[in-house]
Length: 407
Image 1 (cartoon, rainbow, N blue to C red):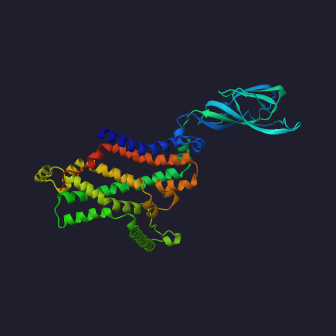
Image 2: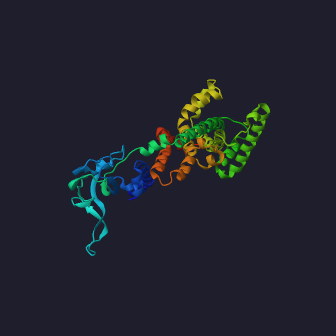
Image 3: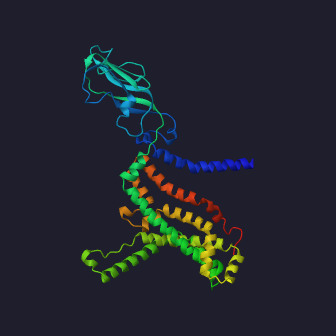
């Protein structure tokens, strides 16, 4: 009973996590009309939707007695994707017929005409079948104007990539945001890992005054809220930018071209901020892993005359790949999905906005175009998923580092 309950709970957790992603992907692959008129859960089964089609083209002026056509061919004539197929359920008839209650007068009639029933369209008999075939017959040759009719079709599921093409190739904001996110995320992941690896080795295997107290201080920094540090960080970057502007004006002739101003919010400011916020946890995880490595291995290396740098580069780093990979995943996900730090400390230029900010701004740009919003969201999710899947074999090993044995 207990095991069954655990399996049910686990399945429920997986379902709760997977369902939103399935909803995003499904909606992004649907047409704009379908995404607005029905929920994503209806995308995999036939759905009844209204479609307007014309009986023929305006340039078709040759008189005829009987004309044949197909509703689906008319609907799909100018479509390269999201081809409509299924069964035609009914057509909305709108017209004026003689009023039996008022001789000599007519009244407006609106009704749904089923397949096989005859309907009067511009003086001719119009009949359609559920497969979309229709005939339009007149008593004598005539050249009627095209008639637009509203057909209700039980449409088959159809998916396409139009939203992704529009977002990635027709709107330059999303590609620019992807590039900006990579510019921020890659250095903000590599820099803290590099510094933390050296620091973790020092805390684990090097003796120096105040080592334990310094490690306690580093670990304590993990509880400092990010929002609490915004004001001093912003003041610090503003002061550096002001000093750099003055130095630039003193050393160059930038005043002539009015290019002395140095921005306080740049990619570099994001690298420094994310490095500072990520270092405490990185040092903690890596130190716990490195201190658990076989002590005899390092002592043998010292007896052989290896220096600390040689031990670190030739022994510690190769053996610490699981811990390094685990923190890389954490740091990459945090920086890639970060909105607050990028909003307050990152560049404000439209072409340099990172993906989370661009996605937030698209709520006003695309408004109710859910398929475009969801396509952008899926793109922002795919990159972290690829990173996680490529390094998942190290993830659990790195998380468990130092959980049993510590220094």
